[in-house]
Image 1 (cartoon, one colour):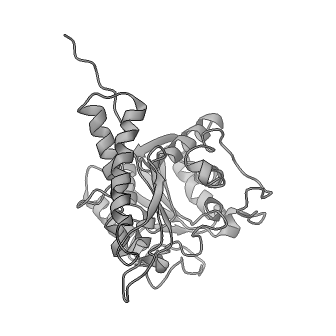
Image 2 (cartoon, rainbow, N blue to C red):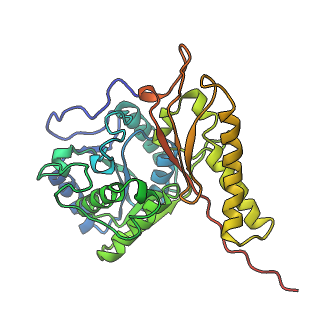
Image 3 (cartoon, one colour):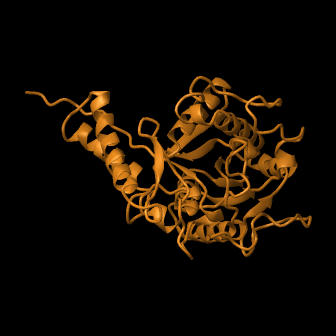
Length: 340
């Protein structure tokens, strides 16, 4: 649930910190660079964990990992409009500034008490769109004119095929954040696996002195659903069926590991069968009971469609439960052949 304060309070000038903590709150590029310079001169490593807020346990696990490996951790909180298509959920995207701040302050206290960490959360970078796009935000259309970073062909396939401006927006904002913060390491989650490939290509092709660290996917402890800021859209009915993607991926993994199958069509076929079975079961129900979704296992994505016939008082999720795209993946590790 979003907190009552959905975005950072306006700047009051002077040295700002998060409440009851030593964490600096930086809103402008000059203030971030002023904070960054002495750490560079003192040879203290700085890590960046980019987020769009609505923090969950997955974000916090990346911050913990960054604190173990670096002297200073910067967490950016910025909802980047360039990552949204013109018909996507920018206006309704959850903005939970107060709860995000509370989570970061609590985590930083835990890090301070843990002697295994090299560093702590030193700063939160929370810029405005005017700060991030000084020439004016160029728009979300495919043919928008402006300064963009595009990584092809990896950003044009799978998720990029159905969301043609998404990875352009990711690459552009990450290039900006990397140039502003100048981190030695950046931390991303494995759930967004195609995004991690785009980021690694960005760093490599533009010769950026940055190590890209990928943290494991954090999942709900009860049913394994991959944690995502967009899960708040689901509501109770759709949340109960949202694990269909993970269930399908696990079946594909078992075909690969337990049965030794290596043929792509057989592995994917097992996953599609799981999705198809659940889809048929749901379609047999009335509109007041069923859950609709569509998607493909190859891209590791499903779209949970809005509830057709809401019941009175039914929990539909954040912003009335719009269509929400869920992504997930499982890494199939190479299996060594047994010798006779």
